[in-house]
Length: 511
Image (cartoon, rainbow, N blue to C red):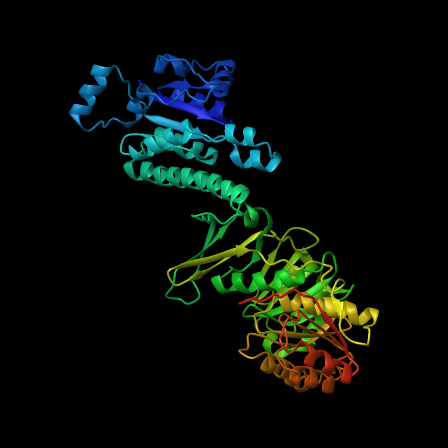
């Protein structure tokens, strides 16, 4: 008779799974709470200490760490010497191991009690998983509740092949690797400020992309926890690698102002249009004015619900991606006329951000890892006035918008905002002077009046020439971090031009 060892923390569907295993000729061995559940369901399970010939001890810390368990899992069925030794030692084969691990993640989410956290670090479970995975040539290792039906199908339809068991093996080692990574990261977070000797970045695959940045590259989307699986829905088209990068930049800006109705138009990860209005169609119309040329083939992120009116307005030009809190079925019908447009939503009235606390970037030979940059909602409010002139209430609101957008735009960047609408932007330049002048040149080309706008620079202005150019264009309020050796020169220039100048004291490079 074949034997299955079942020991699970997540007991979803375990009774049904065990019942079917018994029907397929398996004898069930089990532990602790799993054993009690199976017995109460009428399944003739064998308790683990009958196999180990040793009682569970130390409050359950030791129960499966035993040669009768690991010998039963690990001995090779294709080597006569192993079979002979198993018989000599009285070790009976275990042909299927179904284990999922102590709920460490759930524990650290609900408590800071370190003793409770330590007790929810699984030891015997990972050991059994790794043993069974190592001997996948003979043993099925099941770590995922969603795989129960696949395993039963393989058993019942002569599909329990070595290739099938190999796939289970890979999944098992992913399972234990992710589990140990989570524990190591937590301990480093608790004791080493999150920056230990090792850093583990673990994601779960959501989907393949058609290709990477270019057709000769492979690509895929991975998620932390279940962020994309729970929130991100494809309504039309297929998200490419580049789409996902561009979407990331656009939604962070659009959703960066709480519940306000914001629209961000993005191209290659940088904003080329932004506006806040109660009416989202108005917001989109105003955002489009900033740079309609770049908006062609761009990404539009809407922090709200796209209705028919807004969809019809968007359909006037070619857009590659529209992503929103929701897109109504009627609006989707409007977009159906456009073959190439891609539609995505979060299934909520607003965009749902994951608000990751860490950030990383690949560099040749490794990666750099950091705390995520977060712009406090009060950074402009708490900024220090450096000039005689004080900004008006609207100018301060515009400065706060410009500051947030600049912090989410590739450096060097400057952003001009007027009446809650971005009217000029310069980004990704090697010179901050070039960024400021490029923004004003484009605004002029688009026929946009920046008179009275607020200007934000995510890092300090090293020279007064950008202040002079902004003043000539009619800017009345500037927000920047300060910190240059020429700060006094910048302050003097602002006072000369009758501008309000604020220093936030915080830099927001985005490289």
